[in-house]
Image (cartoon, rainbow, N blue to C red):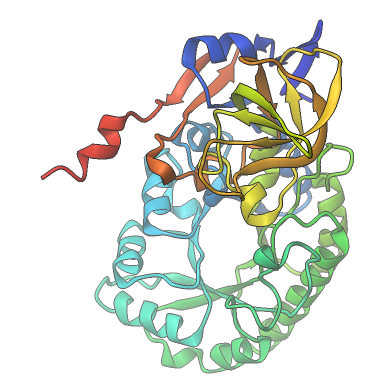
Length: 412
């Protein structure tokens, strides 16, 4: 596996010392392995090779243009959830005919933009959304493809904030509503209903709910086809999770083995929408220790990265392995925290870590997804730089923000 490994006690990314990158670029800094991203994509592509398929990379995981561009070169499509992500996907070279537009609240402007560029399909989440797309398409002159996102009421087993496939969630429609829309398809004069889709949540490590979802979608598709629907695609969504170790994660091969048997006999193009599973393990957030604060009841390692740089631990209580860039040997129990004025500004609580010295570097692992993408300027903090390691060297793919950047849009 490409990516991060140790050599002589020092952490490297594809042969490049993280300390060298931090010294030249500064901290905090996101560091990504191009080789690891490409390897992860190819594993999905190979796993689904037995069927006609398209891997629509979920842009929300990490929308850096350089990363999306390299995925575009491998043949990836994109799953976008906003007009901004659609613009970024096109800018990075993903053809419109390989882009699906998901999301429960598409604006009129976003719908018109997607119609204008000619995307592969909308994933519509309600009858009203189909009506709005139909109304907008009347002004364009060519009927767009629309797939219906159904909510199968299947528990993904993940954190409540990232469960999307239960009946009380805002996403998708009841399968009975989808049947009615297909049955009354003639009343939508300017769209073509071409598929069904489901996405039941994120960070799924057990293949069972994904297989159950595939069976539900396959049964619905077969029923619709028998009723006269001219389906082209079946979209299984995303959600494949990433555990602390690769061995504990759900592999693309295991995922495909769980879902493909349910699709046997359906002559449909299979779409999947992985994001985290492609980029998470390929990225690390490197931060510098400002100092160690030891109290009578607790030890704190105060770093220069904060919750505005990586929100997931505060938002989801997400686990990210933290390790020193250079090993020291002695361990102790501590919270690793940032400078932001919130008690929720932490990366780990009561973790067993190498006791660092002031100025040491720490690598927060598995941060390639929903790291920089969810970062902010809270506490008026400039967002970090992003670096891509490739072919034994590295380059900055997003420069560090400056205070001038933060002030520019507010000056009169």
